[in-house]
Amino acid sequence: MKYTTLPNTSIKVSKICLGSMTWGQQNNESDGHQQLDYAIHQGVNFIDTAELYPVPSKKETQGSTERIIGSWLQKNGNRDKVVIATKIVGPAPFTKHIRKGKFTKNELKDAIHKSLQRLQTDYIDLYQLHWPERQTNFFGKLGYTHDKDDAWTDNFAEVLHHLEGFIKEGKIRQIGMSNEAPYGVMRYMAENKKGAPKMITLQNPYSLLNRKDEIGMVEILHRENIGLLAYSPLGFGMLTGKYLEEIPKNSRVDLFPNYNRYMKENSYKATRLYNEIAKKHGISLTQLSLAYVNQQAFITSNIIGATSVEQLTENIDSIHLTLSDEIMAEINDVHVQFPNPAP
Image 1 (spheres, one colour):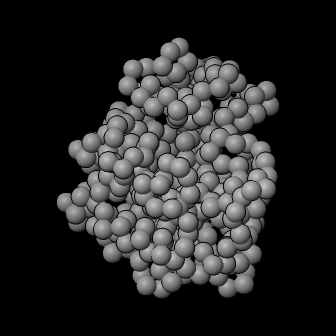
Image 2: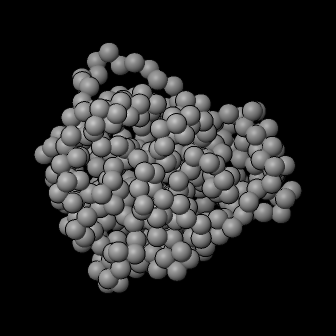
Image 3: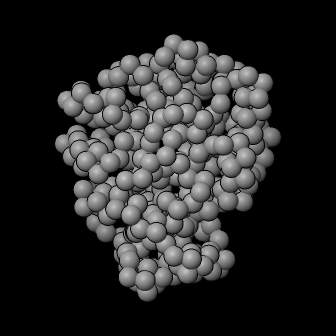
């Protein structure tokens, strides 16, 4: 395994982070524990979850993923050996069974308290805002369209003030963003320069099918020393190649047809070309896709997820592959033809 540190901290994390959003719905507790055991044995020490999980979120299963991680921590007594990241939901129709989704002090207190209980821990290493309160371009939106009816008012300083209180209480160690746009990142950085705590990470989608953050975000990440935690590096499985012929039975898209963010015409065209590159060089499309993300200088950790240990094995093993300049050039040629087909 390869390691780095969360920016501006001494917290050591593996370059591969174990994602968990299937645990509690597609995977049961035993599956989750098996994946955790295997990943830890391979040197992974970074686990990402959220109060929303598993997905799709529903009242009957909400929070199950954190509970599965919590029971595993309790069973193994190894809390000090792992770095845990979790998230508070933002406002959305599909989060009303949790709470309103605002980042008020009371909602943060409620979310943190419940996450700590489910995780069976006294502290969270990295606490993230799952998506912004304001209307902006995330969850499949490439461009920004202004909503004149958006009732949000600027509360960046207020949110950081609330989070600082929980840091001082020892309930969370560090804070980060997720599904955030360049405007939001820079507003948080502006408040940090006034003395507020710093958002040290950004968890956004990044893959061969979604490189939009290279346009307006990557310079910010480098200059402000923020680490990108890349999620969906395989585009909901599209970049494994398993959807190129048909949708397999019991796959995520088969079970949850609304999760079709990566199933667009140009996504298929680009994926076929990436698959040809992989075949030419004697590697799998999965390895090509993950290794590409692993190699980017602005990546702190690559969040991989799996529904089986077999998938997990291939995903983690990607850390040992370095793509040549020739392969990277061929990848970029495809990107020029089909840029960001699945934002």
